[in-house]
Length: 252
Image (cartoon, rainbow, N blue to C red):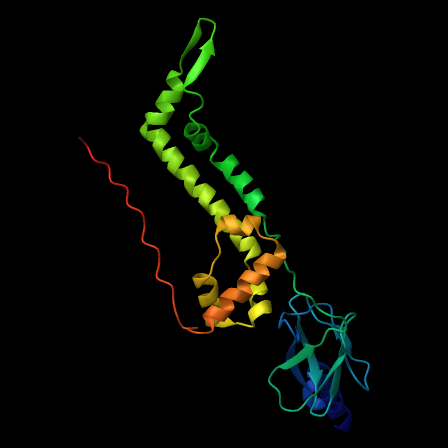
């Protein structure tokens, strides 16, 4: 009878080993502490035993444990992490990188005003050709005469629209030149202004294109200092927007 009972216990132990020794199979997950992304191919071992395994490609694993067991997770490039088993429903390792983790950064160089203008010439090549009427008088095999193509470009609706567009592009170029020299960093360095006061100053005392082109670095700094003395008298003053120019076409 005793022999039969021993056999039954042995069979149960082989089929349900966790139940005999008080062990429970529990699921787990391994995460990067910084990014919270799952980490695969992590070596996990139960200290004081021969139990060890690797987690799967989804960062998951399952292991038989009892309360009080200590699990160790190891992977190259990370500091080891430990968990003491208690009453957790899921075991989660949060592993810290042993090397500095740098997020991918895309650096975009700021184009110069000249590069932007050149790009505009390429993008609106046809408009520039229409806007440039060329010489009204041309010289051919039969002598001097009127250039019909130039007159058409000068007087046509397409020619007028093209000239307006190129004028806007030239204005954009001039504003970019101002922005390239009259910068927030320059004004803040000289005046110490920040936030809304910095924006107010730069809007109220924006220099002209022709001044910026002609001025040396010293002259530009002197300009900022001079305007700052005026600004301090009324720092909350906001410049009124310039009213748009209205072109009126009068038909006689």
